[in-house]
Image (cartoon, rainbow, N blue to C red; front, top):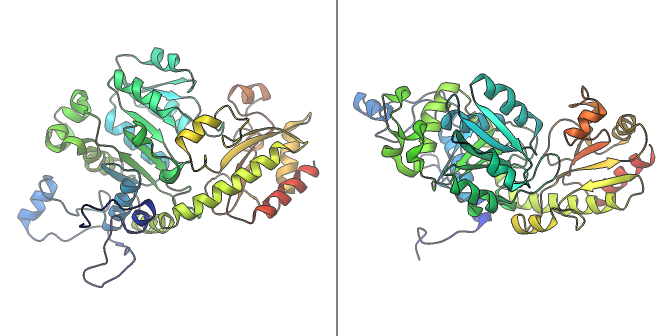
Length: 428
């Protein structure tokens, strides 16, 4: 059997996909091609590159060999047609919308979203003449009702942030298919190791690679992944002549790679939100230990969630790995290895904002910061930080109660994490 016929396992692909040892130096690790631009062999070759008739490197804002290795590896792990790296997860979301949408178009989205995503959808997209409609992700009649002739995309998160809801991707993909619109899924919390949305019918997957993919809190990056299965022949932005690229018809020219090509040579080129080669290199290092880290993240998260659920000072724990969670069965279906390592819980008491602050200040091992997906355990109290401008009533309405604590469980010794949480709870 040749290597072309062999279906390699996840761990093999996370170590090898997208790269072979450097032909000139024999370097085993992916080199950092820290360059802005590339010499063209001839004038004709340059013309072919710019006319998209030849594959090659033009300018690092569009593509780069280090970034390409990262993109191909992610695409392999997500079982996708390809990927485009971006400067951040927010830039990846923007790339999807700028590639697909025109003024007057609409997006229907789950309301269980990362706060920055919701802000981008509501305020930034409104400036571009694009409207986002938000629905309860579990109410599929609401999804149907929100779709109009101007709807161009359905959007959700595999694991909602911070509610811990698990999206029924297959059911939503069926709705997307009926209405001939693509389904995009933010798979940041699950990573391709725990869930691969494309295998459940999603067309586009987005990651904040800053989180678990990088895994060490040292680099910001994002990536857009596409299945190659959606037929964009009726999308004007993909199928019609593109005035931004000498009237090229991307769908006619590139077929199932049309979306990714347009995202790269138009959206990335014109927004400038490219992934740096050095950050691509660091993200590749993260990918090479992804499965090992995620197994440990999930094991620790399950132990912490079970401990907190039994603690007398804890009101609730919103972790789909618990049998008490309404999303437990969905988590077993979509994330059979475990539903990630980010979840929230609530502390009881009368003045929950002050109680939350006391709890945070009493922790020793958990780092108090606004990020998730680090090898180290992280914590934040939204009511006293990211959402402090909201009243208690507004917090409840947004699904972020005044006593909510969000945890991102790291790789430390399990007993040490339980000790730290227990002593901080008893300090209240």
